[in-house]
Length: 164
Image 1: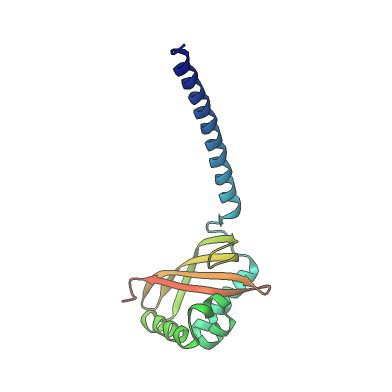
Image 2: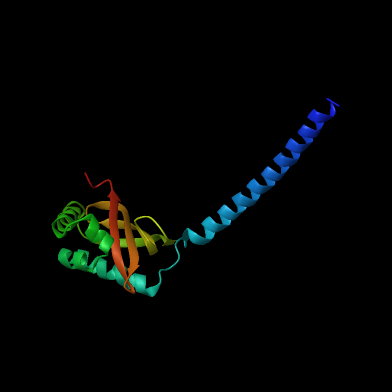
């Protein structure tokens, strides 16, 4: 009788381990599918939707012509929450002074997100460009968020060795 108890227990534990593994595989599969469906959609180097191209072109023109107040006023609530008009203007002027004008840029990646939480809630595109500036090369990131049925600049980042 003592011999059957450990065997029964071992069998039950094995059955539980088998069920547990099956449940873990199922949960992992669900998480992977959910993450893929809801998370980041990488469009690689494909073209941008027309309304995003227009929004980025507008911001680029405003940067070119140093219309920093316009950029701030037309930016998203996230941009305005992170910086005052003065801080925004100072940062953009500093970038312009250190890098110069954009000579050319080529689309690098387009990432689309639909977020239910975090700072970038809602429909978001993060668009990166390889950019040649007058005084160096770098990467530009335009983060646009859909607000009030329009695309608004949420973040703008430049990474370049020319920035010191």
